Length: 369
Ligand code: SF4
Image 1 (tube, rainbow, N blue to C red):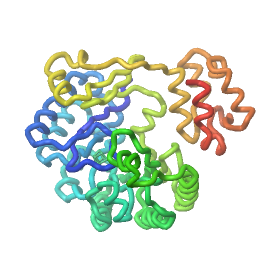
Image 2: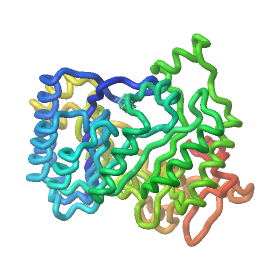
Image 3: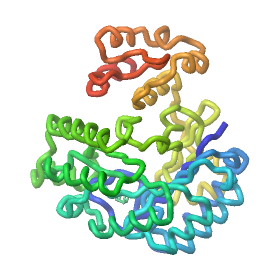
């Protein structure tokens, strides 16, 4: 059963220096053509997506679309997915796009949650990352989102070249003060095709040390726990009852449909990926939407472990046996070694990483991949 729908809007007003996502700066004509293609793909999958429990519109920057273009798309979406029964409907937004009109329009379509890419509250780091918002704009946006009673996730980054402990502590103080109900706190991974990687390779910028990154991760875990957040996934923290239902679909290896440029879908024991080229994607939706997909390897017996161990509670051993028809230790006997060396443990019927295992998870993964 399809539990979630992901919709990718690849447009941004400006490209950040660390970004490796499927994104672009585009003219209005192309944006409109793309949104029409999305509607065609949505219609193609309408039978499968009608009863989705979650919708997540991500990017790129979905909020960078003109309001009437986004509204027209949400209207189409509401004729296909039953938005009255949806359990969680998230949209990603840039702080500078949060206006009263934007929020009012989202309310009409039962959007329940806004995920805002803040990354840091330090203006010099924001500048380095190529982000266009200021601290004052973030504060104003949070106030509006809270006044309008949306659930709020803030994305933050750590291990940014040049980031000091004082900068990190300031960001954590900011989180304490503004108290969103969900935080995604990612370590900045320098991907090959990014501007920061070019700066590092040409020695304009120094890479962040692994030891310091680990110290920062400890500080984040400790402080967020003090502020009342429960860590439930490697990079995600929530106030009680505010875990991301949509992201849990991925970590629980359940079925979802991804629409749009480079989006993945997983159902009926296959995983499919849409084209990376916007031209190919738009043309593909004019023909037979299924033919444009690339079929990817999907190996649930491995993925339930890899994604399940990302969750702090791990994955349930009985559920694994039910789905795979074999005990996990029969499929991967080597996992017993990690029970003995203290990287894994069994708790309440779940297999999970220990605190030590969270740091050394790669040792477990390398043995089973
Ligand atoms: S806003 Fe997000 S998707 Fe767009 S360039 Fe920046 S990091 Fe990439």
